[in-house]
Structure formats: C-alpha cells, structure tokens
Length: 400
View 1 (cartoon, rainbow, N blue to C red):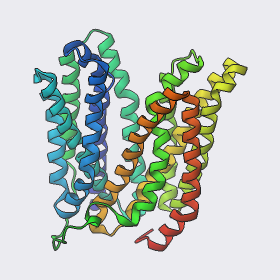
View 2: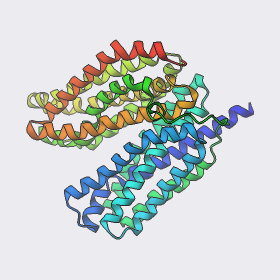
View 3: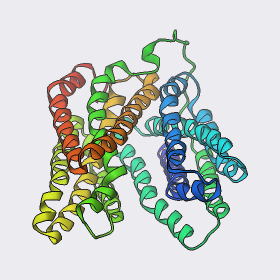
View 4: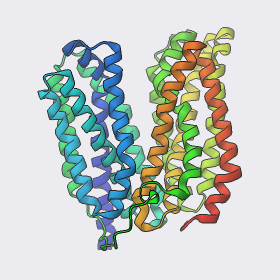
C-alpha cells in the first residue's frame, strides 16, 4: 500500500511539473512576435528565424537525450534540463541584443528537447506496465490543458497592457513552481549498466522506424493545421474566431485521453491507433472541402469547421498515448529513453515539413489544396500502418 501511495504521489508531482512547464512555455509563445517586433524592431524574417531556431534546437538534441537517459540516471538529467529551461526565462529579461536573445532561444530549445524526453521517460518508469497507457494519456492531457490556457493568458496580459518583464516573470514563476514539483518525484532505482559501444541504435530505436515513418506522415498535415488554419479560415471567409478551433481541438484531446489510455493498457495498441487514423483521415478531407461548403452555406461551413477541430482532437488524442506505448513496447527497458526520443523526433520532423510544405503549396496554389495534400498523406499513413507497422509491431514487440 505504501508503494502505491508513493507511485501516486510521484505521478501527481510529475503531472503538475509538466503542466507548469508547458504553461510557462505556451504563455510566452503568442507574445514573443510582439516582443521581438517592438523591443528589437525585428522584421518578419528575423522573427520567423528566432521562433524556428527553438524547434530546430529541440529536434537536434532529442536523439542524444534518449541516449543519455538510457545511459545515466534519469532524474538528475530531468532536473538539470528543467532548471536550465526555467532559468532562461530570467535570461530573456536581461538579453539586451537580438543576437543574445537568439542564442538564449537556441539553448532554450536544447533544454526543452531534453526535458520533454526525460519527463516522458520518467512517467514510463513510474507507472506499472499494466497502467502505462493510462498514465501517458493523463500526462499528455496536462500538455493540452496548458496549450488551452497558456496562450489565452499570455494574450490577456499583453492586451491588458502588462509589461514584457511581467509576462516573462509569470513564465519564470510557473516553471520555478514546476521545478519544485519535479524535485519531489521519486523514481525507481536504476541499476548501473555496462556501457555499450556507441552505435546508431543508441540514438534511434531501429525497430521503431516503421512506426516513426507512419507517425511522420500524420504530423505533416498536423503541422499545417497548427500554423495555417487561421489563415485558411480567413481565406475562405469564415467570420467566427478561428481561435476556437484550437479550443475545440484541445477539448477533443482531453476527452479522448480519458478512455484511450485504458484501452491501450488492455493490449489494444494497434486497434486504438487505427480508430484514431480513420477519424483523422476523414477530418482532413472535410477540412480541405470547407472551401466548397462555404460557397454553398456559410453557417453549415462554420459548424463543420469547428466539428472538424473536435474530431481532430479526438483522433490525435486517441493516437498520442497509443503511439508512445507502441514505441516503448518495441524497446527493452534500457532503451526506453531512445524509444521516447524516436517517437518525439518523428513527430517533430513531420511538424517541420508541414510548416514548410503548407506555406509553399498555399503560395503556389491555395490552402485547401495544401490540406487535400495532407489528407492524402494520412491515407498513405493508414495503409502503411495496416500493411507494415501492425505486423512489424506484433512480430518484434518486447512486451504488451
């Protein structure tokens, strides 16, 4: 009974730590373009570079973070990355030049890539294997809650006339409290291991590459959506606030995570992913068709537009913990960090491709064609998942 209480307490602490970390992150995200423009007089190209260097840095560090987590004690690495991530919010207050701000942003990206992989891996360590899918589901839910509340809070502070120092201070305070919660997490004992020779499979889970390719194809249209859906709505004449698109999407993710993790824990990993795939495929085809629905009936298009966001949230919310569990179940215990890193790296690469591809297609054509292209990619991902990933998983899975 005492062990169960310890697991529950540690799990609650890491949930709180993860929420506060992402809240601090999302609080600042919508405000940064204003800050860079007003304080450093940066143009749009420079702003885009500053924002993208964070993502690139996080992407670069993730394969190495998986190796470090599988080689050394995980909690110290988690706390180190969390501390650096937190301290840089204070550093932003002191950055006097754009060059220094960019350097801090790159280091911030490195620490973000490390802390997200390590936090995810520690959750896998804490939770009993029979409840791992449920545990990852609720852990991911804290991300969605922060994504729903953080940007809204940041924009509210900015619109209310709060100084940038105050906004940075709010992010710093959130992460400081989160760091205290993170330090209270008790991780299971990890026996020392024989150092393996450095090889490719210490950085990438080779058995997870097929699943990674399937996930990458899914994340391309997701990247298009998070970056361009507001512009798409404006282009086709949807007058309702497109900000609600992300609210409904977050609600869908929150609802789906309440039950999808339990299904995963019952061994239905591939079945859960397949159900999410069908929802996502239909959603992206409907999203690309909104331009035609708008020409027919504006009210129906608005209802459909927000219904699609809810469906996308449910579909991706179902798949996130299931895909994560799939990667972990393909890896031995001493490669859990590598498995998580491969999972997150596959997702981030697709997001990056989606940002570039969506903008390019929209420039030479229209956004609805970009989403049609994304919908076709989800069909390819679904077929590939059924024909190759599912049999590959059942052949090579270590557990579950």
